[in-house]
Length: 137
Image (tube, rainbow, N blue to C red; front, top):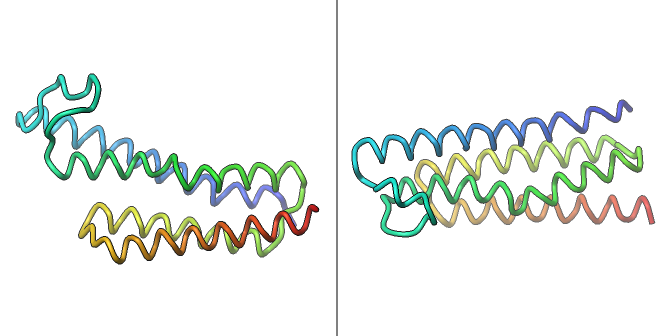
């Protein structure tokens, strides 16, 4: 199996993160322009902000929490030159779940559904890590 195939899910996650950076920037710029937040807010990101600004920022920050384990695992899989079909399937499931999680957070922000998706992503990642460790140990 071509080991570089595992990079495609990682690229998809990076695209999601870049899109969230752009959304966050545009949301912040709009809020400053319409004076719903003061520019000083950005010094320490403290103070009152509209909910959409807080949600946008938190959604971006989430990309540097659980997905870090995703990126590490892909790096280890590449180092050990051990890409399997299962790795690809689990990676793509994780990516789809993260996209859905972001979509829910930025639209309805319905916490029970969002939490379910988070837990599903965590479960997929845990199973993936366990299978990887089993293969190499």
